[in-house]
Image (cartoon, rainbow over all chains, first blue to last red; front, side, top):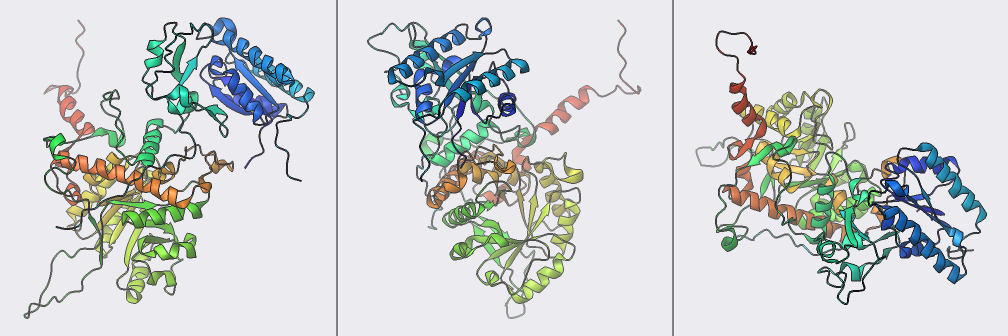
Amino acid sequence: MKPKPEVVVLACTQAVPQPSALRQALQEVGLSGHIIQEPCSSKVEAFHLLRILAKGADLVWVVGCPEQYCQLAEGSTRMGFRVAHAQSYLAELGLETARLGFSRVAAGNPEGLAAVAAEIQQRRKDLPPNPARPRPAA
Amino acid sequence: MPKKYHIPVRQVPPRFKAVGKGTVLDWGEGCLRCTRCVKETCPYEAFRNRTFDDRSLTDTIDSLCKNCFRCVQGCPRELITKAMNPEYNLLGDSYWTKEIITTTWYQAETGRIPVSGAGYGGPFKGPGFDSIWTDMSEIVRPTRDGIHGREYISTTVDLGRKPLFLAFNAAGELTMPVFPLVEIPLPVLLTEPDIGVNKSKVRLIMAQAAQILETFAIIPREGLTSALLPLAQHLMPQYSPGSLNLDDPVLGSVRIIELWDHANITADIDRLKGRWPNLLVSIALPATGQATERCEALAGAGAEILHLKADNHAQGFAEARDKHLKDLIREVHLRLVKAVLRDAVTLVASGGIAMAEHVAKAILCGVDCVAVDLPILLALECRLCSHCQEGDDCPVDLGGIHERRGSQRLVNLMGAWNNQLLEVLGAMGLREVRRLRGEVGRAMFAEDLEREIFAPLFKAPPGSETLERDPN
């Protein structure tokens, strides 16, 4: 089996209709992230984010639409609130809040995806390994 | 009273959560804190039982939700919404649709006929098998009589060559050799799919399922390992051209073998029959433009079983690539009927047999039985993602399934298919599947109907070469 991905991206299908484009943008900055498509970024709840971190991912990123373009009107706004809410849990646990992040990008915008990938890569570089990651057997 | 054929189905839950059709968007912000929340009254307890799937890193509510929309309609602040699951939308392709994949998973899990319960909202007709409408005029008292009606419906078919006449001497003794013949109680053979990982495990599962179903699993000879030999009575080893060795010990323990068609195949079969006279031989041939002539020639030369293979989308190969399997079957069947050879030979078709109705429709077009391939993988939870073909990991760890579990899921699928076949036969008023072969009188073909109805409307009036538009 593959090693566990270090970066998990939860992408709104409206903002990223083709996950392969985001995968390619991530590969170009040297990351092999696991992309999970969501019908709306507001589908992502705090417990999803925390459970993915508990499985050992170093960084979890949510990609949603720009707020004014959200098809569910408030979905993207709620996503921002939820990531912030989950970050407050991380702060309470004494973990880096930077392990969670989000971006908003409009569909059909390769430069936007490249910028998202660069932002993810920069954030990943600054983070130490996730203490929850299972250590390889010696 | 003869023993009734019974397929022992048993619930086998999937190892991986099935991809749900819809997904719940739950906007917890703004909740009124009702004392009786719609999440508590979910009839399927989806909100109570939801967890987090560690392997797919997703919420399990998508698999638990049955899309009844009770929560969506009931929440006073309308905080719960349903949306299509993008992962579901990506399943399958134009032929192996997401509906086929998910209903196959359901049948493999439960062994039951998939019932949508909300009417049929699909198109009136479609391409391929969907252009055939079967006669359902004999449905009478289904609730009282059950699936078999008043009489037992037989799904048994024969594999092998049948004599067109018998010859006796003056003493009344048979003066001609008797051909070997094998009966299978289900008109379905299992054939190895051309994709998938850990083929040795898949072969073992196919062989075990074939034993339970009393049918045969077609497996390449090189894949027939010692672990499969105890099940040899239900195996059909397949030999590529030139690989047949008469000293092969496997030939002594199997009942049927399959040979790929080649120029000297009749000589090969004669040699084989000289050494193993009771061994049945099936000839596999691709459904190309020459398949019809080739089938007639082979049947005339004494072939016992002809196996016509189409591609995974039920299309022919080479010059016949635009032809659907149903048309290719009809061509071969009618050619054999014309040559007075149809009753002598067994005709099998495979490729693109995706649903239970395809079995009935393929038989209706003229085959004796079908061979299934990709549904075997679907029964083992395959998602047809084709990652294995790209050298990537299988997302459902196909090789990791326990063989007993896998074979039971395959048996469940065939149990559900068999029940659907019985339903169709009962509705047509047929008491055995052998009577369905080539019985196009009990079906309507959309192409034929359109031609009959619309062609006269657009026919040019007598005396004019073409239709002329009235300038006014």
